Image: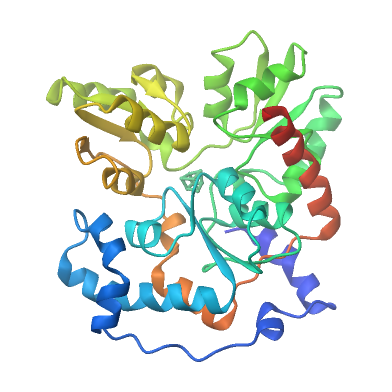
Length: 360
Ligand code: SF4
């Protein structure tokens, strides 16, 4: 990931700001034994994941889950987990779950001193942008994103120079540097509304060319693209979906709008991770196939036992860098701290808040 993200935080750290470890102190790593106390403390979480995690594996995971849950109280920390986290994280240690923007907004409403972001780097930056007074940690600084890495703040300045007067909308999957250069932010849930909010005939929607194309198919506004893509969703193909339908004719297929337009056209429904989850909970199809990252079906399945999940999926290697063991290390050693230049954060916050205000 993201040389830019790492180098951006380094000068700040070296200048005057103490590290999170300096401010909060490092504590001893707790013993990790599968004791009766651990069994009792993790029983509720186990009930939610036993359909997917065998008992023998749970015995290895539960002590870390218990240690994290104990330590987060000591640190006054809140754990944010994206819908793509594995079930042990999603159901075992998360305080708030959802898509990246839901997480960042909900975190502002807590009185936690520390946010542990279980997701990728741009999500941690978004949390820091909206909660500048909180300490934001990410368990693995290398957890990046092909979309966020496809564009820089300098690229956006270049676009603006070459296309004066054309509004530039950034999908939330970008760095703070990029958000700071854009007019407004959007999510996959509200991208169409944001595009049409300008009342002009042409806008840029960066950096996901597929999201931009999918939105462009629903509006008269000309949606100009940047050549970025999610390496997970762009691998799905329309032919693959047609083949699944031959094998499972009754299956409902729901897809994320980061998929290519021909994939979205083959699906019965397309929406953000939050909308996909709502759709399954409301529609209760007998069989469903979620065309997105693998862990989401695992996480939703525990809340919808009557729905049969057919699971073709693609793993996000960046999301999978976040593990229970690294979350524990974060809380023990108060690492890795995500720092955003205050000026960049202030300008990026304007773009995010414009979108939030548009929503309400
Ligand atoms: S799933 Fe795609 S958009 Fe999400 S973090 Fe991974 S690469 Fe980025």
